[in-house]
Length: 325
Image 1 (tube, rainbow, N blue to C red):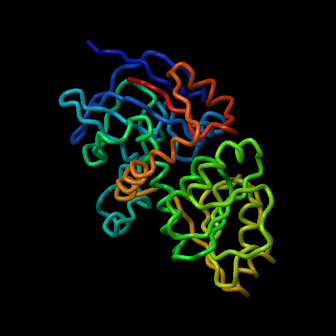
Image 2 (cartoon, helix red, strand yellow; image 1 turned 135 degrees about the vertical axis):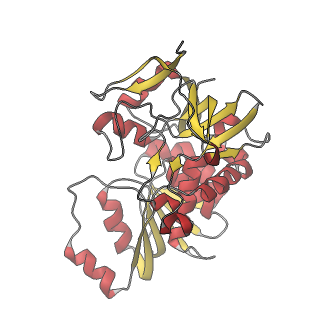
């Protein structure tokens, strides 16, 4: 008999709804875990609104996951990647660039379900000192770590971050001990909601940009103007991290490309995270739990997730986290 479970599923028409689906089966080297919490991400909302290049339908989304092995009670966070382990990227510790990468919640079913099948090598043990709902933030924290590593940040650098969403704030959290930082955020509600957090991280936050140049700029917002402005505000020899993708069809002028040439600016992409960075992300969350609690996160039931994804608005809420188990 095939057992059924509750899950949020996106059907072939792109409609997301909670329904009964068969429980997953474990493949070779995989474990079936009970999902405890799965955090909502703007990427989840994007796939409902307009799809995604990595999405294969029908699909259970969700990639920011904390789960438990019911056979022994051990809790884990889940690195959402599945790499080949043999290519030059995997062998050099950059498995996030593996050409055969499969991503949980996109290529394979994710965490908005009662149970999930996970490869054993994707499991990162959770220490009892960190709350399971905040442990879901390990994945976006790992992406922020990747972004800061790609920036080449050095102590004393002036760092500009565009956007005070979850990833922008986690970038600041990772950089707090090295950078003199500024976050440019255009939404006054969001500024008010995270001001104490930013002060604790040593970052100024404002709608208006300061009259200065920066060593590093990172776009944690998808507006093309964040890339244009960031490049223009770099010091000679400065570094731009292209962290958040922008809408297709947007263009950058040849004049701006010439600025990269004349001032010897560097531009680096930063995409996803490695398993090692995921472990580091979990440590960052554990070390910063008190500060993260200055930000408002809301626990919701699985039934509330489709509406939240369909009408994505996250002005004052740091994170919506679905309680599954």
